[in-house]
Image (cartoon, rainbow over all chains, first blue to last red; front, side):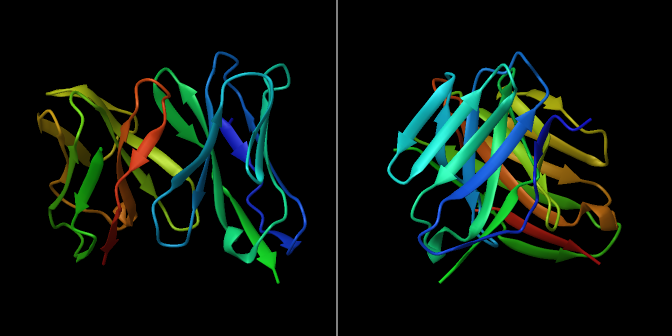
Length: 109
Length: 112
């Protein structure tokens, strides 16, 4: 069983729409959760992290965490073509970040 | 501010040849350091991590090895490359407060 799972996509949304990216994890002891964005051929960059159940908002991005259901999601409002990238979910396990396989997002103008 | 550099950026190596990728971090002391590999179209696989000089933990048994000869230097090596070693190798350091990983620019390895 994979430790961190994401739908690989591709997920295609029109410009201006809300993109919803989901991630589930298997380790109930995990306390920290991260979303990274990776453009093709580049290294990942952090979008945001979340520790507590509920929502955390940063600009157009909202991370949602539900520890009881072991899922974390990322919402991107007013999606732009520049948001087209692969989004990686990462879960802390004892000081190591374990990554999902990533979801490819395509925002169509 | 902290910076991380890794090199070389790209390399093409024949099967059976050796490998050495280097990574250095500046602006922080005693960082936790990591090597990840990303195969084409895949997520990041943790290969090695280090919490201090000479302290290496291996996550995946394979023909790769890592060393940390200095506090802010992390090296990934192989004596004989396999075709399956091709991929995008990423070095990273972590902020012990937030747990966030900061990645280097990556090294793209093609084994032919």
